[in-house]
Image (cartoon, rainbow over all chains, first blue to last red; front, side, top):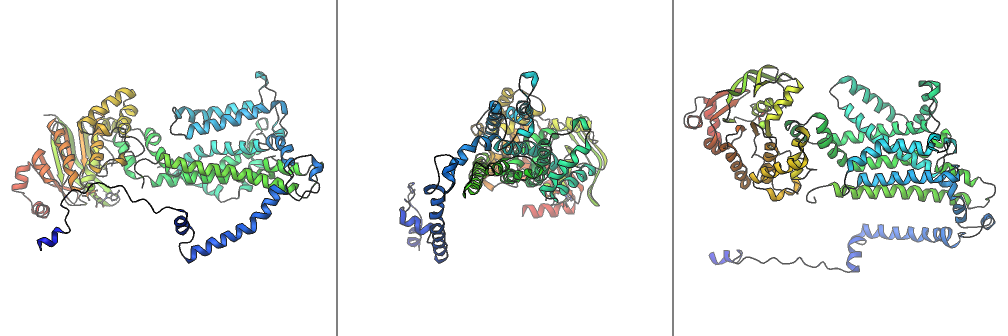
Length: 375
Length: 244
Ligand SMILES: Nc1ncnc2c1ncn2[C@@H]1O[C@H](COP(=O)(O)OP(=O)(O)OP(=O)(O)O)[C@@H](O)[C@H]1O
Ligand SMILES: [Mg+2]
């Protein structure tokens, strides 16, 4: 009996050994990822079939048959994409009819906006409170002054009817982000307020806006806003859809943020209160940092949706990127069978790049904000 | 001796459920009260009324000369003097250990960051985990987290510490490191109210043991007689269950 047990019981301390080297190699990887069983083999082969079907014509259209040099005449009979058209029209697609000499103002605003976003969202950089203040308060004001102009500062006024292209799309997207997140957070908090009236007002707003298509919100903002304010302050024609976008985004953001607030254990606010933190300090230092981190995927999802929805503003006469692409392809100088397709492919690439970048960034951000051992 | 906590005929209901019934209790400065009783008897509710995490509906609660009435300023004044440690630690997971400890002194007392950090380090040394200051709560063991929670409360230099089952969420081998910290706190003269079923702790440090059942205080005794000769049937039954 004793002799038996001794076979199972360690007599010496076992030294730590290094883990076994995974049986590496291409073959193993293929087996594991693509051909693990019949179903995955079938899916792999079907996928390969689709690629084989789609890749050659795409390659021909986008690269080998595409027109890379020359003017409008080169594209007249082209069977591939007409990239010279994009190259020629790029300034127009980017800035709309914003006067050429003043386009640096747009560049400054867009670059400053992106720099601030990077600063705001990179946990490693210092003074992020300052960045938040700049981004949510100073930046919108400065951007408005710079873009619209201030004769007193020697900046010529540029009417918003000349604004257009990628710049307006980014402007709508950025303003949507700048205003919808704080507004949505405020709405989410209001919806959980102890005061029934505030709770009701927030719920009414959120449910109404969410229950209505974006186009309706845009039309309402476009045609109804002027009725509510004195004629002298009549909101600018670009400002109206911006307000509509922000309100629409805020309603969705409110529900996303509310999810984060609900996911937070009650003990967190209790600990903050027990330590004597004021409700405001507890919100700012304990509740929101955690609730917003939890819902980063939802927030980014909303931003991506909002960013793409902004294409609908062309319906109320705003000349955004897609509107500019439409206008560009209607140019009688550029006639060719592939002009329209080229324009749409370029637009698709642009939107895809923006949205994919947002998505990747949010994944990185989530990883960095998640503290403690990986779960 | 002046009473630092006075509860007189305190009643509380959750909707129609009468959770605290005519609770009267006076605690002198420096006393260590252990509160025990069956689950659902209202122990947590009682100590949570003392820093107004829960509000009572009738009766008087006076803490360090301030009556808790619902007045925001009075509540704030009391919370500044009363530290609390929870069963689930409730550390802030997005802040480092050091930041957990400096948050309240900086936000509530407007202490400069450096001073707050120095203060936090002295208390982290007291609970014997200064080397973990830069880690995040999820990287610590349960026992270490609970000691951080104690240090975090101490950073506000409270006159009274409330503990709500501080060791019940811990693995057995970590219970003692937390109890040791609490014993040393008691030896320094801290006024403590501890909800716990650690009867060894009660024997060692309590000045009085309070036994609660269905929202009432059934018995208050010094630990010796409480364990040797409980007066009430329900106390006997409870101790019988616990010590079996
Ligand atoms: N927010 C609440 N709403 C309604 N009932 C509650 C609430 N909180 C607690 N109760 C009830 O009040 C009673 C007392 O709860 P309390 O948490 O004070 O008990 P306890 O003595 O601390 O028990 P335990 O040992 O399980 O922690 C329980 O029956 C509980 O179900
Ligand atoms: Mg309890």
